[in-house]
Structures are given as structure tokens and as C-alpha cells.
Image (cartoon, rainbow, N blue to C red; front, top):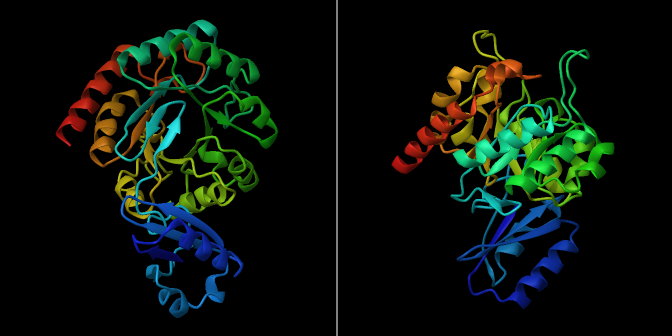
Length: 332
């Protein structure tokens, strides 16, 4: 349920109303907009008489939200959320490009790549220290050493870090990481999501391989219901019967999610297609569809990459993609 307050409501009146609502057993989140304040009510709202609430002098309108996701719902929070990742803003008209290798392989590799992507226009550095792989025999990442190398790359370039977490007990290792990524395989690892919700660190939440948009939003709700509003959604393709691409890039999810939620939405054309040759047109398409940012894999020598070389761009190819994306943005 949401209650829109009149723009004449004073802070004291709002505080009294919030206190009254909380005594009814619901959690109240005030959202202060430019022209009015909205109170988001989560919990058993059946105890609240809508007629009584609407009759209050500072209340403009009351509306029930039928969707099961409340905190992530645009009705709950009409204005776009802006997430700050180490000084880089995402959402609300702020566009960011997250780039770097699939896996951190060495100090030279990650620092070389970080410098290259920054020079091309990336504002955030991605790189996997912990790598979920389908086969237990594939490279699993450098783990804690990989995190240290990412932080070295940050020192060299100033780029904030985005990297994936695999388990709750790894959380202490991520204290200095700017944004924690939850991969497709962990999108419905609810205990991990709840633990991330108890932090205030930005979370990049990737859509599961077979997940619906509603399931993605419900996973975001797990994080937000624990008190962390800093969630970024990522469309990275879903599994279908098509075999020419790694996944099927659900381009329609971008504008649909922008309708449903106030959270920033980024697109990952690397995982969505699995083919370096398709990243440029798909990055342009995602930008035209209204995404708030892109996550792209870049490697100094894709042929030698320890994971996902086929979908990694060379630095010079990444330059071309950024230029193409900027042309689309200038038209928009």
C-alpha cells in the first residue's frame, strides 16, 4: 500500500502519521520527492482502514499495490533510484559502462585491462575473483588473491570495482569492494540475498538463466526488505532452445523492467550472446531500449583467456563499442 501526502504536510505531521501506521504493525518507508512525500507500507496492511487513512488532512490519496514486490515497485517509489558505486552514479539519467575480464588471471592482465577500458570510457571495472563454472575441472578463479589484484587495479586507475560473490561466508572478504555482483546461478540464493540486504553496499543482481522478470524483482525484494535499497538489476539473457547464441537476449526486459521498477537496469551483452561479434549491435540495442548501463567483458588477449574468451572483446574492439553506444545516447 502507498499513501501520497499533500505537499503542505509538515515534518511533524508526517512523523505522527508514520508512528500511527507503525503501531498498526506495518513497516513504513517515506520517499521524499520533489513535489510530495509518499509513504510505502509493507506488511499486513489489512489492519489499516483505507477510508480512515484517506480522510486524514495530510493524505492526498491511498492505493493498494497488487504485485508481490513492494519495495522494488515503481508505484511504491515513482522516481528513479540512483545508486552510487564509489562515486559513479547509475540510474536516474546516469549511464555507466562496467568493463573488464571475465576472470582475474594475473596482476599484469587485470591492470593492463583496467587501464585500457578506462581510456576507452568505462567508469567501473569488472573482474571475477570467484568464478562459478559448469565443470568442476574448469578454472574457478584466483579467489582472495583475485580480490587483492582487483584492488591493485583500482589503485592504479581509480575505477571502482564490481565483482561476484559466491557464498555468505565470503562476505568479510568483500569489505573494500565497491559493488557486489550476484550471478545468474545465485539469483535465488535467498539466504545470500538476505545477508547482502543487511549491508548497505550496492548489489548488481543478474537475472537467472530461466528466471521470469517477476522472479528477478522478487529476488531484489529479498535484498531491499532487509534494508538495502542499493540494488541494480542486470538483464544477461535467458536460456531458450536457440543454440547459435549462448543465451537469448531478452531486449524487451529492459523497457518492461523500467516500467515495473524504479531500480537501475543494466544489460550484459557478453553473457547474453556469448559471441564477441554480437556485442556491438546488442550494446547499441540495449542502450536504445533505455538501459542505465552496460556490463561488457574485455580481455587483452581473448584467445588466451582462462574463461569466456569467445565473448570477450579486445581493447580496440571495446573502443569501437563505446563510440557506437555514445552515438546512440547522443541521438536519444
